[in-house]
Length: 573
Image (cartoon, rainbow, N blue to C red; front, side):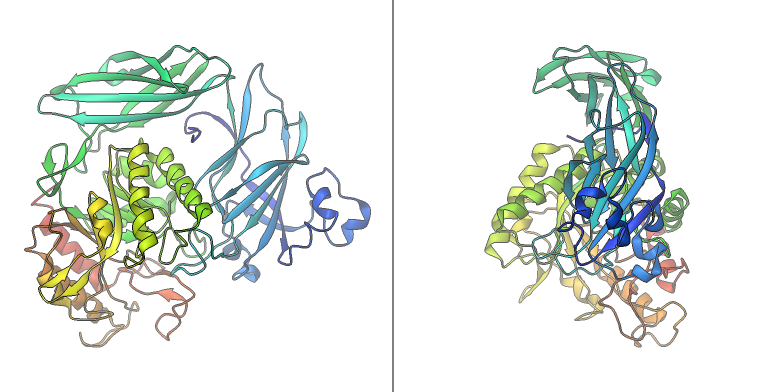
């Protein structure tokens, strides 16, 4: 279960660390592996290794961005940091949290191995109450970003494999019995708003008194135990007493949860999202998603974004008049969801089950569920999150994949059935036009389709013969677009020019305008991003399909999409 920490007392371990490369993995076989996590290494080992004298590096960061000599490094990197701890308050417990390490991490504190974690984009915690020393402590984390055949993602992707401790590290102090996580679900009817509250407690106190307050609504209720350390309650409110969260009015309410000595606060939006009559409805009203896809990347920083980087992304989204963004192809930082709550931008969030994954392997399936669980339990209280995506461009002719992915859809619904489940699928050609033949589509609430007519194949107007899904499920064009190098101009039929890219966008927009089954789009992509497999003279290591380049300079297609979205915004939220 995810550990909620947003408003808790924390001690940041960000700042200067030491980084020691170990590409040959020799330190694990050598006695240095045992001395790594001790206050001082044996004198004879200092010839090759010193926990206090590696490469100085700032955490969080992406390895090659702050240390260019390690730009394409893949393998083990040992991170070490000494810090001072003043001791626990009576009966307090302390947890160590890493918000992301790519791809696999093993962690030691004062010589004790705390455990490991696989998956480069989601948070993980270890309880360190019994391992912290009053005074000086030595923390060691081995980060391994080597790509692997049995990973999620696997060895080949279309984005850069940044290594390192990429998001913040912190110590979290809590009472002996505390609220580990909570969940808010909202159902909206014609005249009532029903709010279901669940909490999970952790600690020796088996029977606890737990309450939730909505100060701005002047409501407080007690939660009742329902087993498995879970407590629940339901609050019913008149609809006219609540301002429902939506893109045009992203109202957030303060909540306070209390369990004995433990008090947490958050700001949440109340809203309901559902499929009705083949359309996406938010709070009972039809919604057309004006979106764009984006990677978590900034020039010179990789995926280690700061508040200014996140603000800039939402500035671009607002300039485009978006009400929706697809966070591809992996979980982005928790700050993106919180900012989206404030800005009124609905989100598609996904895990990196991308292209070729060994779906038949039991360990891979377990890892798949783990990554879904870690993402969903982190962000299930964000009103902005509308869609959980389980996969991108996986082979729908693979029988194993077709068995496993519907199981993952059901796993997502078991965790959170208050949102819609989707995946980015392919569209297929037939004698009757373009159709969806992927059997996974029958399990999804919303079908995403990635199509590049006019770029990789076909013509831009081919989507005019798209037939949709026979059951009438809403479709989002989750990827569409073309490549262009910023500042490269020419005729509309000359590839890699801004004019060519804009013409593809215009042709695609014209082709889908009258298709009622299409409920939105998130073109590929907001800005250019690094991709080692893209190496022609216009790319040189970048995917150039961005509406902006990696420096934030707008291409012609940005303004064309902006014009279309401004016209659409008058038709829906």
